[in-house]
Image (tube, rainbow, N blue to C red; front, top):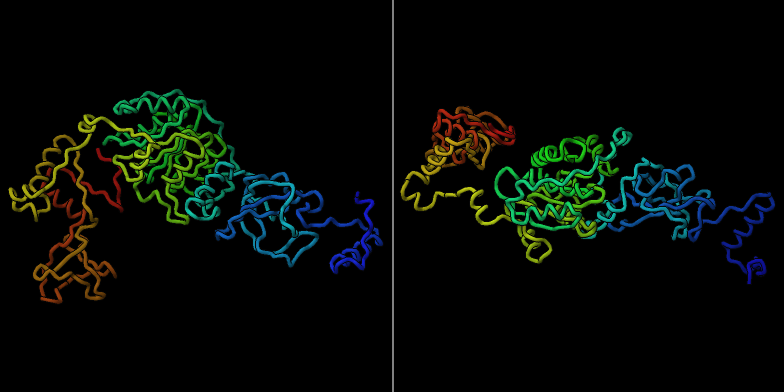
Length: 516
């Protein structure tokens, strides 16, 4: 039976709510007003407004879902999927005005999709603001973040805080340059030292998806080898992403990419040292498709490279690859997810091989990419240790700062070039003790450990006070011995051992990037 032929419901048979609605309808008709549309069971507010499904930037797992909001007519053009918005959250149903829910606190969020109707049966709140019309959360990045959240039992909002940089209005208002033409495939270069190296590059240039665990040969060639692999991927018309553990390593690969690709414009460097504005500007260039090659530190693992063809990670055993913020994803696992979901090539490189990398080879997911034994012997250094036999031949070797074997090795190597001596402690003498009774030297003011700033000055490691007249509390001794020797004292001893050779120190306070 059609609705026109249905018998009107008797007011006496209606419920209390229906009776109240009939009374209001009667009053409106008496005043000549048009009936307001109802707002339950997914009906569109005002009969015209569509619905936006929004991911609210709120971390609790029980809120890890999409929320429906009405899109006002003045925001309909800019409220596209992927843009940043602000919404009111937590208002409840107690405050509804003209079919819209009001109240609640303002929170940031992202529009995931636009739908015609909502499955929610009550009144919807409207979007409060479209922060920016720039679509920063594309379908690929959203799927990756969802996969990372599921793998680490975290919330999608927490992963998005790691994946998306903070917005900068000035950088966002600048247009990105058009993409450069596809480069030519590069020559294998030093990849020829590996039997499978040239074939790996050819597969990338053809558009294939090779997966390899690369055991790099010692030496200075590995940054350029990364750059060559990226150039081969770009030659196929696809993008590439390389994640390294720290900014200095990223700068080395960046310099190699600039040399191999013939200047700037084809790749970007993404590190925390850039600052928020420049980092966001470069991130936008990647998101807009202006640049298809990225090298960066941990946060770059989420870089939205278009048509991704290769993901790579260097030194996956470095702890810098694991994020310390929830849900604490590891760059290696994120890139593995990208390789599977986005169907890309994969390259894990290091001078050694971690347990996780060995497992990838063992289960057949990736192929080993390594040099022959002869190449390894030619490139790897000779390692010698001060063993028991050496101690027997040199009785002073056990206590000496520079055993005879080490001194001879340094003297011979100095005829060919610089020598690196690495020590575990910085400073001059970070730990002292009484020469007579071996009692640790303590500050007279706070009992903190004393350290030697140089050959003449003692300072407390806790309160920072100088200790000009130290004496042992146990035996009264006034002479000290070094329990631990730091880098500066070692450099001083090396200077006395080799007086004609300049000695330079490099550490946290002053890092030497290169030596002549």
